[in-house]
Length: 388
Image 1 (cartoon, rainbow, N blue to C red):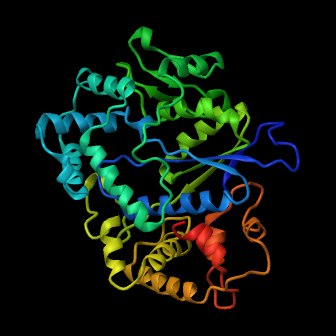
Image 2: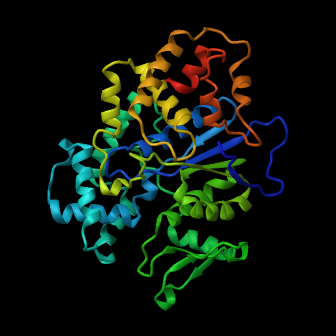
Image 3: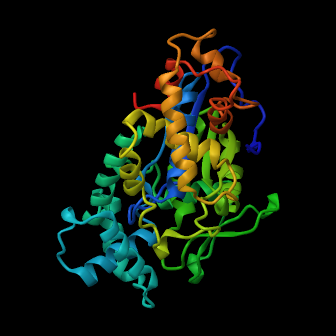
C-alpha cells in the first residue's frame, strides 16, 4: 500500500502510554443505486481498518448520510423523483429500480432550479427528513452489510453535523480561509491559496453547499477531540481531501489521507451514474457466492479479494475467477485456523502499522496469504474479518 499522506501539527501527539483517539471518516455513498465493486472495495477497507484499529485505540467511525443529504446531487434526485414519479410506493422497489431512475435523472438535460430544492433542504436540515427512495436503498444496504459482516455505522440513523452552514463559514472566515462573494451575487470559496492550493467553491451563489462544505460542517467540531483523523476516499477526490487536511490539522489531529482506487470493469472505470452494475452489484455477488460458500467464507473471501487481491490501486479489473479463488481460499483458512497463537492479538495487529495508529488493511489482509505463512488464528479472523 502506498504510504498515506499526513499533515502533522506541532504538539499533537498525546502523552506516552495513553490510548490514542482515532476518527475514521470515509467518503459516503449516495443512497440512490446499488453498491458496486468500487463501493464494496472502500467499505471493506474501512471495515477492516476500523475493527483492527479498535483493538489498539479508541476509534470512532463517522459515516453520516444525514450530513450529505443536503448536497445538490441528492436533493436534485429527490426533486426529480417527486416531479416525475408522483406518489410511487418505494418500499417494494429494488435497488436496481431506484438506480435506473437515478440514471434517468443524471441523463436528463433539465436541472431543477435552486428554488425547487429549498423545501427539500429545509426538510432535511430542520426535520431530519429523508426521501422514501433513499430510505428504501439504505434498508437494503443494511441487509447486505449484515450478510457481508460489515459494521453498520448508522445507515438509517439521524446524525446531523455539529455546525450550521453559516457558523461553519464564520469559523473559516475567522481563520482567513473563506472568500465570501455572496454579497456581490457570487459564490463562497475555501481559500487556502497561501498554502499553494487552489480556490475551491463550496457554496453556490444561490446558497447550495457542495460535498466539501458539508464535510466541513461535520468535521470542524469533531476534529479537536481526536489524536488522529483518517480519510478514506476515491483517488479522484484527492484535491478536496488535501484541502480538508489543511483546514483540520491545525485543530489538533494528525490527518492521514488514504486514497483507495476504484475497481475497473473490463479495463474501464465506470461511474455508477451511468448504470452498468447489473450482475456486479453487492446483492448479485452475495447470491452468486452463497451458491457454493457459507457465510463465514463469503465474509472472509470478499475481504481477501477486495483488499489483498485488488490492492490499493485501480489497475486490476474485476475478475469473477479471482473472487471465486478467494472464496475457496477463505474456506481453507477457516478450516485450518488454530485456536491459539504465539502472541496476543494487539501485538499481531501492531506490526501492520507504520508511523500511524491505524492498522493498514492491505498489509494485514495480505499477511493471511502465502504458502509459507502461519495460518491465521481464530481470534484474528473473528475479531477483524468476520461478523462479530
